[in-house]
Length: 425
Image (cartoon, rainbow, N blue to C red; front, side, top):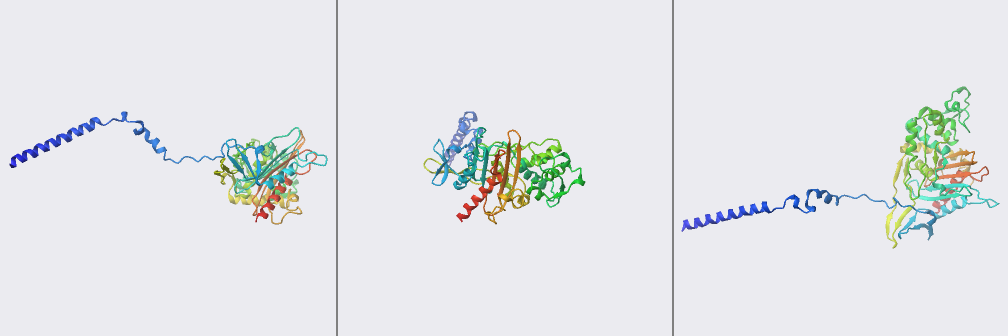
């Protein structure tokens, strides 16, 4: 009995082992190889599966978006543009400020002629890049479309701001150290730049005074003695020259060229030709004075909605360029404030009868004339330094008979916006 049972157990065990062996062989033979696996199971497809979980780059709806000022509508006290696909772009423009600048630039004299042959004014918030107003005016047979976005005018002495920034950043010059000079008010000779005839130099000025009164001989000599071609190129680039400006309207690139000849390069550093500028770019340069040296991406877009009014995108501040350190930007702003307190623009700003005592503005004027055609380019780029946040680039191009200049257009924009801000508090 025990033997029979034992025999049965051995027989059962043998059969069990045989079954397991057969199953193992079947598993090995029957398992499909890699080449017969479906595409989604191969090792080559693994990265595709992983990529589905990777974070995709965020697409900014403003990239590739081109607006058209001719299609801007004023609806319920705010500007917007309706796009062909049904979306609605709500704009950052401030209607009262926009209309005030439009009225000034399109004003006429007693004979019905436009007072401004060509003009462009751009105002924006330095801290956010939001464009508060953008106005172009160009009249007559030589009219230029979108003048505020065109870099056809020489930057003139506005470029002294960039040169001063380079002197502070690369040469660490003492802004309170006076530099003696002679001449250079209309044209800069090599002798006036180099200062070879020191005994004849009977005037001296600090960097602040040179900016405030736009003293060409001082700026050009400081550039000649302290800045290389590469220094000027680098600082110009950091302020946006020779760069595409990211914006919802096409902005012409502001070109800056620096030659190898050191005297000619010093003239350029002081604002004598070789550099062009648009009012839009001028406002961005001014914004760096207020915003710790940082230029924000300019935008006209407050938000974008679909046809049903659902918000698809809301604009947020985005840094574009860093020009100089915050400390040096503050120094540059303080130096340039002399332009409006006792310098070339004082009569349009601080010494203007109705100008608020607490409304401080830093900036730079610029003037340069063409002989043919006979046009005078007058600039002001600047920004407030107090609670009201506005940076302005204003260019008025006049014939020999003129009514007002870039600094008057800028002062009007700043004063108008300051009143709007004060009323809202």
